[in-house]
Image 1 (tube, rainbow, N blue to C red):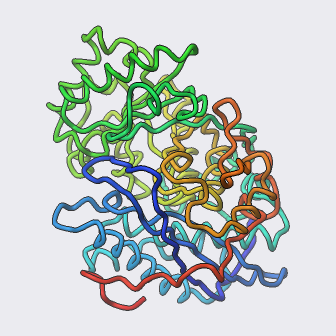
Image 2 (cartoon, rainbow, N blue to C red; image 1 turned 60 degrees about the horizontal axis):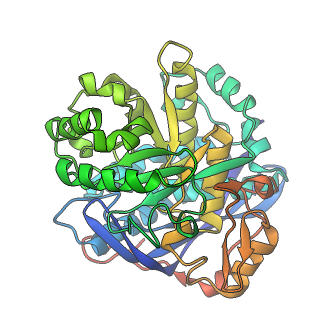
Image 3 (tube, rainbow, N blue to C red; image 1 turned 135 degrees about the vertical axis):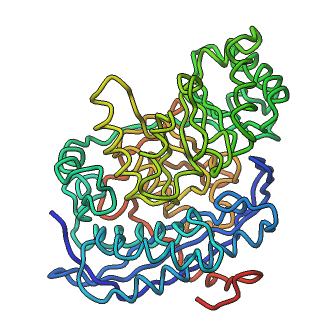
Length: 465
């Protein structure tokens, strides 16, 4: 049953995160970036006050890839989007459901950000992070866990942002959810990652026993095909079957370039191992070109959108172009993930199958990973990209006591290796049992005293939040 709330405070913090190795995707290589933390205080109707939290990396050059902007400028765009969202949310002073509050602000957020030259995908980052923290506080006030709370629609999700659906679609979908007890990791292979030998894709200490692999593409068909052939040769030595997905991060210029890659996958014997295990291809073309380019005969290969998912009508629009899937990412909005999962379930009642995938870019271990993992387990995502477990050294720059607190509270997810707390991967899977507790998938909040206030945006966005 939906519960109403009103906001009392929103505070933003950040912490530097240094990567253990470079992560190259698309046109950027990341060695370090800040992590955002959000702390929310709400008053819940008839239940008193509660505090909630969320976290996410401030990833450069993903939400906004415009070449004229530096990586630092794109991070500042996210900071500015957060500031705009804070003002809009706090301006809503009456009691509302969590989803009603989100729906009241999201349109104004996109419009206000557009006036400051912030694109919709980056604009949505602010509400996405605030919404997660609000939900954490709401679940704590209601003394229930994420899985039970969402099955009962505690947030009050309705069809006001998705007129293609009915209220009964949400009731049927949410009430029937049985969260997955384990979610397989999909091991990311970045463009600069080692392929062969020690530290390579088939090295078990490196891939943690993964059965699913996400392979980044550069946008050059010949170079990508050659690299995929090398990766396939290595993965064939694993001793067990595997599946792969491909992610171009908008690097394929157009349908002609994409068709050249697909032709190689269809005909090149050296790519047979990869092609026969390929589940789908993620966001091959730039988001603007995607919206103008029906896939036609290519659609049979299975494609999903990710960066092009910047509005509530993105999935229906992509479906009309031949796409069958869409990514779920907490940084794009948990409610949009649930709406899209409801759509996929409804659309799949016919002869075609539609799906939602779990793609990780901004989920560092701890609060961010746990909330995104719970969301995926709830909507039925059986395997999810989890790059945080190997691009960042455990809890990174977090205080040791904070990492230990998470490990003590979530013993199935973390283990103390003697060299710090690390994600505990069980035969290629993450377990979700310890996420089934009061709040949004965590019994621990970060050490607020160890965090710095969110920096004010510089460069193009110098207004104070």
